[in-house]
Length: 162
Image 1 (cartoon, rainbow, N blue to C red):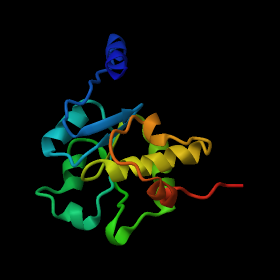
Image 2: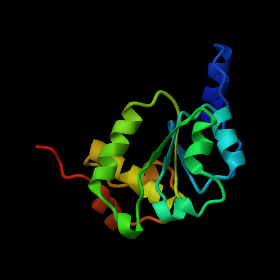
Image 3: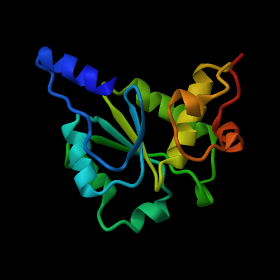
Image 4: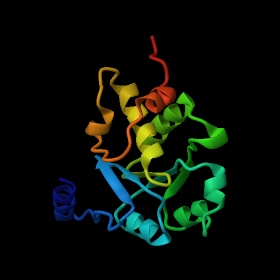
């Protein structure tokens, strides 16, 4: 489906491509879930039209990378946000609210990543459930092939607004 849309948009002069990146684990519309990217992955994401990279790794994990993630993302013309999950950061429903704001303000593909993509997938699952409380299978909805912990999703899901 993504390949079809990229081809269709190219007919109208919109230059986009599918990311040629081994780090992309799953795609759901304009949200791509990924493992830790290399700088080459960042190049591929930028070339494919990604506008925002959301990092769900902890500050300690991000600091241990061999490159400055924020600078590397921003130097490629993409926006960068950190929504850390795990360690001292824990798992907070506030992260899902912030993700909703980021996604609403984005006008193109968004890449969410952590080490393996799993924490990002759980945050995105909480976002999906927040938008549709009847949704019982968010991981199937987003074609997520990895681990699934509904307890973590519940910890990240804000209470219903009444």
